[in-house]
Structures are given as structure tokens and as C-alpha cells.
Length: 635
Image 1 (tube, rainbow, N blue to C red):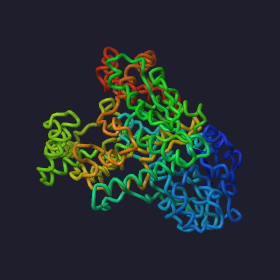
Image 2 (cartoon, one colour):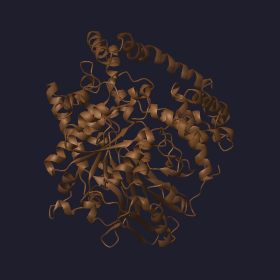
Image 3 (cartoon, helix red, strand yellow):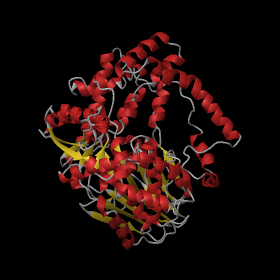
Image 4 (cartoon, rainbow, N blue to C red):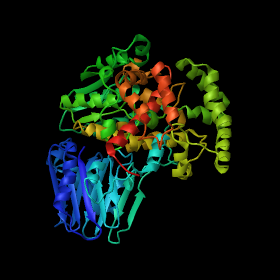
């Protein structure tokens, strides 16, 4: 976790050091271990340093090479270091003396615009190539590291956070109403726009290049291959191959000069990471892994039975090798200050829990924080295998798997068949046909009735949404297609950016083993029967965790419902804020259906634990209202 900034004056005007310094100072919270700038003529780069890896202690950024011919600033952690060191002829020096930014710069020299595809890890970087008079920028495959930019005919500026752009007079502060509409409609597939008109993101897995002609090119460099297939001769071979890839995804993320921490929720994902990391740390340096768990002991028994995961957490802790820390999430305010200081309004009801874990980790001197996001999608629950079996007429296998799943999950077979056979093969296609007919007759409506319909029509949200989704299949009968759709959503970069800014305030770098590019490629290429097997969802992970996870965690079929604490605490702690937004809605009235918001408040305030959707509706409306007051933007 570091911070990067840059200015490229397209009109040839020299970059002022004071402008770069102001941008770097604006994101000082991202890097307490040093700051520096470099500028030459019309180009300038800046950096804030947060040490995490042993190599980062040697790093000096911006890094200048060959008499200013190449200069890089980077917020990056490169995980395939051994492979790159060999390919890039760094054999003349010890690996521990080679920094990640040096590897990126050498990769650019060797492979040019193809270099991001050669990098495994999380990164956002910018390279100034003096010889080609080109600025080359790139972002990692899942958008873990943020990269914002503004471009006009006179200037191109970029930064890790929007606030660093806004400190420049050349960058306008105008509200992007289409993004407001997307936010209210809970639509996150646009990976480019922000709430600020003309301030954009580089999409995940993309690079941006702007050169002599000042023409800007944004190009994707990686995507999951829908045709790749992995075939082994036995179930055991699949297990061993998965375990090898997963272990490497965890191992490379343990590289740290400081104590390492991990979430431990008691679920399958976080427990698999923590237990694998525990074994690796014990072998390599006899270090203990810090674990951080959210607990809710003060909740009433009727809520606690749905959310209390301490039995599973304790089963993991009993293995030993951990420094365990519990965070009383039931005492935290769910409407944390980040909701209106985070540059953009967000809709993340459980973010307050992560902030509590991050703050606790910071107090323990932890700088590297492993997280289980998003094992559900990378491994895949595998339920779409049932749909595929029906679609291809493999009825005997289908009924065997449905019977096993019904027994394990304690669900009626009819319910499983309804949800995964009847609905996707009969009812959903009819629904898609209805959506198509409504679209061509112009009777379609936004997804969320919270949005003001006149506003939605004025900004053309349906047209824009259709344009973004036109290449996404409405019906995906195969398990692999469903798996790909779940990983290609724009939700992940959005979640990653929120986590990035939250953790930055605690001097942490979150790392996500399940978002390792190699692991995602492996899991998508697996046969569907390795993801759903003998009635077990997420089967390959469960079977691979033999002798690593406690059995009660390895074979559990449910997970805690965190909304029980959020629903109760939002009303308990923030009722006055809710009332103020409802009674004085002028800021959001042009965008929000106020009657829907007020009805949601009436139902929620009378029975907060009974109507789940209402708290989310109120959170969205309240955050937008608070942020509009804070930002003071004009459309």
C-alpha cells in the first residue's frame, strides 16, 4: 500500500514542483515512510511510501533510470518475482536486493505494452518513457490497486485517490449525475466513471497509454479464458493440483518485513487462508499469524444464533500458531466516518466491521492483512452444475447430486429443483423475454424503485445500462459460463477500492489470495463436478483442506448473517441522522423517490429485524445525502 500521483502537461507547460508536492501531501495517509517527487519539463511523478515487503525497505520512488529516459512510480506488489528475475537477467545480484519497481521497469523495457500481462500481483503504476515521449499506466487484473485520472486538452493527471486530483485548479468539481443514477439503481458494471464528471478510472486488467499525439488509448490486457480446460486422471490429482496453486497464492502474499495478519471469521474462506498461512509461517520463520475476528456477544439470543461464529473461530484457534484478537463489532457504529469522507458515497453495510479489524491490526504493528474476499466466486459454489446437468439431460447424475445436497443442506429436493432447474430453464428465459419486450416498447424500469423515475429518464440510465450489458449473455446454461460471469462483474474493483481506502488510513496493505490470477484461471478451468461433488458446494476447496482445517469448519454448509448486527445498530446509533435525512431531503430530492425512502424508514423503524431490504435502502439514501452536503458539488 503506497500512493502515486502524476502530471503530464499536454500543452508543453513545465510541471510545477509545488503542484506535485501538494498532490503527494494530500495522500500522506497512504505512506508514512517517505515521499518524493520527480519532474522534468512537462512531466512529473510523485510517490508516498508504505513499507510492507523486505524489498520495499530498499525502494526509492519515483525510480529514475538511464539519465531520465525511464521513470516509474508504483503502488505494487509483484508475486512472480523468481520467474521475472530469471526472465529479465537479474541473475547478477541477490533477489532480496531487487525491488518490485525495478522488476516492473525491466519488464516494460523487455515487453513494452505487454508487460502487465507478465506480472502476477496487485499493482497500479505509471512509467514515463522519454524516448517515446509516452506515459504508460496499468492496473492489476482485479483492480485491487486504484488508479484515477483526469484528462483535458491541456493536461493529464492521475493519482491513487480522487482527492489528490481535486487539489489542482485544472481539475473541475462537477457532479456526474449518471453515476448517481447507477448508485441508486445499485448497478456497478461501469468500471470507468466516478461521481465526478470527467474523473475516470483505469478499468481492472487494463493499461492506459498517452503519447506524442496526445491520443489516449485504454486497452484490456487480460481476461479469463472461457476455452481453457484442466483434465486429470483422478479426483486426488485435482485436489493435489488445487492445493499447490492455493498454497502458492497464500505463500507469495506472506512476503512481509512486518507482522502479518488475517481475518478469521470462522467461514471456509478465511479459515482456509489462516490455516494455510499458519503452516507456511511455522516452516519458514517460526512466526505466528495474527488473526482478527469480529464478535457480537451483546446481541439478543434470537439474533446471536444467526451471527455468532465463535464456535468455528475457536476450532481454528485451537490448532495453535496464532496470535488471536477479537473485535467487539457489536460496539461499533455502522455509519463510520469513511462513508462521507471517502470521496464517493458507498453502499457497503459491513464496512464498519472491516474498519474495526484494520484498526486493531494497526495497533498490533501489522502491515500485511490477508482477507478471504472472494472465495465464493473464485471457487464457485457450483450450484449451476445442477442446471447444466438438466440442460444436457444427465438426469441420473442430477438426481443423485440433488439428493445428496438436500441431505447435507437440510433442504427439500423440490426447493433445489425449483431454484436450479425449473427457474433457470423455464421461468428465467420467459423473464428475459419480458425484459426485451419492455425495452423495445420503452416500458422498462430501473432495478431499484428508490431512484426518481423522472431523473432516471432524464439521464438515460436504461439506455446506458443496456449498452454496458449488451455483450453479456442473458442466459448461461453451462456451469463454466456462470462461473465466468460471477468473476467478471464490475463489483470487485468497486469493493477493492473501498477496502483500499479504508485500510490505507490504518497503514495496511490488504492481500486477497482468492483473487490470485493463477488461482482464478485454475478454478474456472476445472470440470464442474470438481466444484460441486457428492452434494458438497465448493467441493475442491473442502477436499483440499483435509488435515489443514478443523473438520467442523471444513464441512460446514452455512455462514453467519452479518446483517443482524447492522440492522439493529443502524437504527440504534444513527436514528437521529436518519430522521434528519428524511425530514430535510432537499439535497437528494432531485435524484431519490422520497416517498419510497420515507416508507422504508417507517417500516424499518417499527421492526428493524424483520425487513432486511429497508436498512440497505436507507443506507444508500442517507450516504448520498451526507456525501452531497460534504462534497458541495454542482451538476
